[in-house]
Image (tube, rainbow, N blue to C red; front, side, top):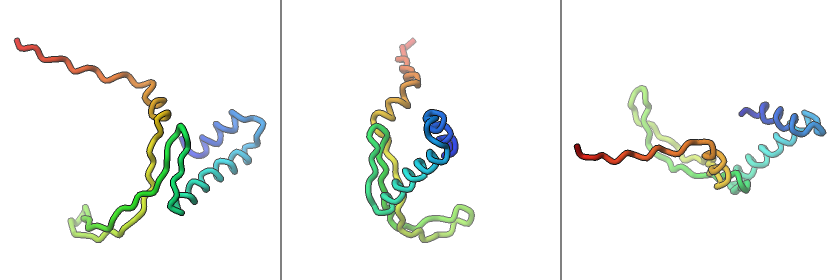
Amino acid sequence: MTRSELIAELSSANPHLLGRDVEVIVATIFNEITAALARGERVELRGFGAFTVKRRDARTGRNPRTGAAVAVDEKAVPFFKAGKELRERVNLGKPARPATAAKVPA
């Protein structure tokens, strides 16, 4: 789902709100999550999941085309961990893995 699809879905579910107001609300929520992560804070949405920032140490990488060693600087990357309720809802419609049949000697 894209941001515009999210806005359209929320607008249709809430006809009392104007489309531009829903767009401002969605943009504000995303901006606040981004700003909190930029400050190094953790953002937790109960039932959905948690956003955190993880640090990746500097390392020596390889250029895949030439194979030459390349210095890769330390960086911060956003990380999302799904909450229990989200995992359960995502897995609700998936069939269980088939059990492996025990091999019977012939």
